[in-house]
Image (cartoon, rainbow, N blue to C red; front, top):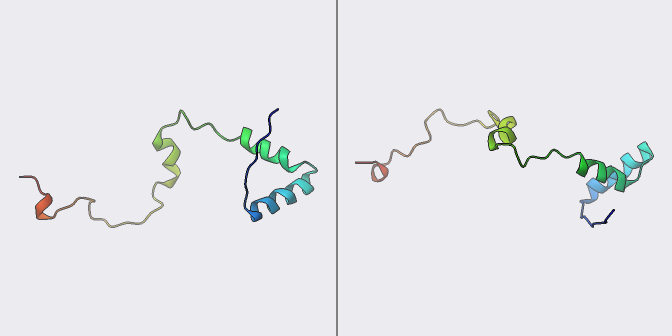
Length: 74
């Protein structure tokens, strides 16, 4: 197994250390588990990746088109 170095925020590191103490596992084992268990999104569509965001932003009911005269087609 090869080693790498990662930088984490102090809060994230504290959370990992706390979980490591509770579970009796090492911080490295927890990080390894999360990295290896991360979903592979390389083959997913943009819609599949962002579908949980649909409807999360409030906006105007007006269409998102520019009706200014200089942008109109003749």
